[in-house]
Length: 110
Length: 117
Image (cartoon, rainbow over all chains, first blue to last red; front, side, top):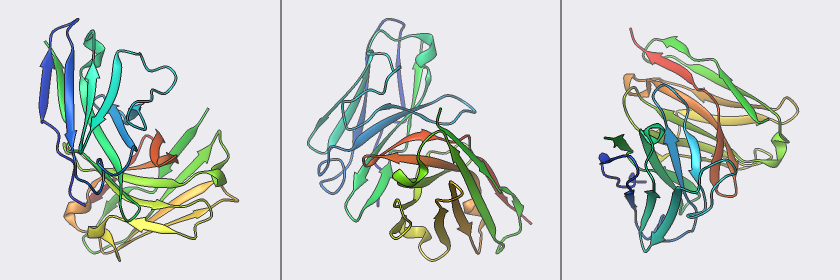
């Protein structure tokens, strides 16, 4: 049950795009299409923004897109806005019916 | 509107116990798996445990097997997490999270557990 690997930080200017990676193994990310992404603002609870690799809950802007290739999932935020500045976490369902999170990425909008 | 309200956190001595509760509303509680996720101060999210719809199957993060026990009361719409033999490294905000199709969707606001002498 090792944590998924995310870069600790990412940044971009308003209007730009930024991609955050999430690397797991063939026992979690690579094995299932059950990768989710969460956005967490300081002092707040996390909020799901992507589930099942590519799906967006209602109300989440289409600027947020998810993808996966092999053992690595990715979150792309297009048209960066000031309110996108937050911590982002990936998670995956894993073998033995458990779940694992990434270490989190702090996104800064310059 | 889905609501998850945690309670039961607080200050506990090392080696002590706490029982966290999560009252659910706005959805059919018995239709969903439920999870606990924790976040130590300034750190990332860590999945702790999951219970299936009727409570017959439970899973835990390997490091906490034997110390934590997840349970639920579908009649009361409430999820629980029993924390035993608490250590300093268990200090965290504990979130109650609704499961959805092998993902986690709605999150409560969390309850803070502080372990200190």
